[in-house]
Length: 308
Image (cartoon, rainbow, N blue to C red; front, side, top):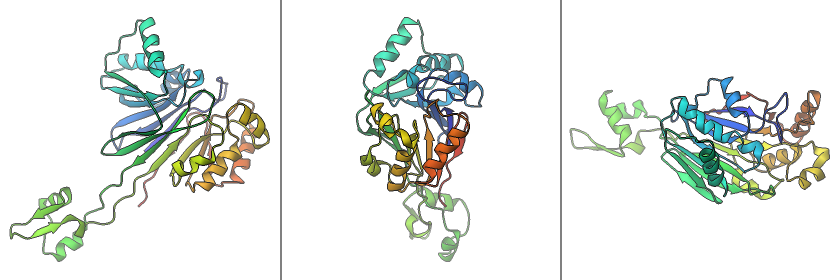
C-alpha cells in the first residue's frame, strides 16, 4: 500500500506545487487505486507517473472548492479512452452529483464504464471484506469531509510446527486447514484453525483529512492511525489567519497528531507563500511538536508497511 501525492499546494497551482490530489495505490491488496481529491491538472500530473487511470476504483472528494474538483470531469472522461471499463464509485459532499452530471452532459461526454456517485454524510461510508471507510465532518466553510480507512485484520500464519505435533504432515491439507474454521481429518478428528495459526496481522489505519480548521474533537477519529494526512496551509505564526480562512497551521496539525498518538504525520495543502527554505521552516515548526512529521511535495511517495 502506497500513498502517491500528485498535488500538494493550496488554492491555485504554483510552479512548485499543483493543487490537491492524492492517490492510494493498493495494487498488492486489491489491484486497484483510490483517488482523494482531483484538482485542476491532475491528469497532467498522472502523465508523469506510472499510475494507470483504468485501475481507479474509487474517488473520494473532500469538498467542492475548485482546487479539489476542477480536474474530476476530465479524469473521468479520459479514463474511457485509456481502457477503463470497470465501475468507478465517486464519494463526496452534497452537490457533487450535480457537478459531475452537468459537466459531462454539457461537454457531450459519454463514459464507457458504470459511474456511481454517492453524496456522503458523516459515519460509515462502506465496508467490504478488506476495509471500513468512515467519513468524518470537518470545518471549512463549505461542507468538508475527511476519510478514515481501516484495513481489517488478516488471518495469522499457519504454524507447521503445531501441525506436525498433531501428526499432520505437509501437503494440500495445510491449505484446507487455513481456509476454513474447522477441518475433519481422515481419522475423524477435528482441527480447530485457531489452534494452529499465529496471531492475526493487524490492519493498517489511514486518515486523510480535507481542508479544515484545527478540530481537537478529531482526535477520537484519527487515534492510532498509521498515517495521518493533514493540511498545513499556514505557519504557526498565522494561527488567526488560518482560523479566519478555515484552515490549520502546521503546529496545529502536529498537535492533533500528538494527541491522537498517530505513527506518522504527512502535511500537505501548503500555501504558495512558502517556498524553498520557508518550507523547511514549516517542517521544523511541526517537528518541534510531533517529530515524525513529513511535508509532502508533488510526486512524493510513501510506502505504508504492515506491522509484523
